[in-house]
Length: 116
Length: 108
Image (cartoon, rainbow over all chains, first blue to last red; front, side):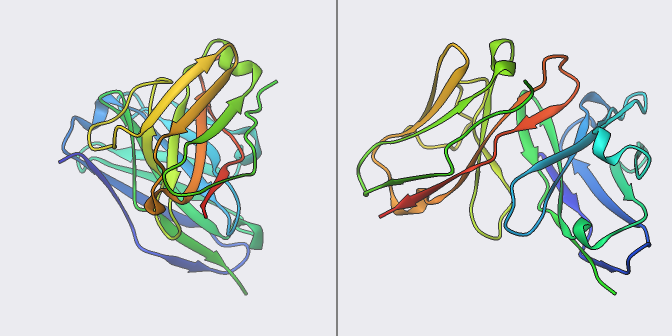
């Protein structure tokens, strides 16, 4: 079936980087963009950006410009989101999501904890 | 404006009808999707393109629109429907996603 499976939880120190993966299956990976959304503890959903696996084009929310890079590996149908210069307020659950066959499907989420 | 506005909370008794609204200027040109999120879980789509229901979503979930206000209606609310609900759309240039602030549905 169509699914997005994310990598496991990460604990990072302030100033470090984290790279979260999202492996797609059940559909043609290059046909649909992958979005990244995060949710701080007790807060709402915050869109970070998207990547088009077909051509590598990206669009980032202005808030994350210069600190985030989204990439894909089409050979493994995997999308990646790297966030640099981590701060304590980057502690959040990070989700990938794709609008696949007209409906939005979510990954299970990856908890990133930033703590010294 | 690029914001979507939802009420922070809605409370209903089991069997009653819950209505959650989402409004914003961006909705004049964009469809709305509704996502349900239960504690400790990823969001899950319950309505897309304002009124469409994905397969597997109960018929008690429905969506409607009036101008730039879109409404998620849950008829005959059940205890299992208690969750946070987020509306989501695209911005006017269709290059990014917008989320409402979320509505906590409490089933009394």
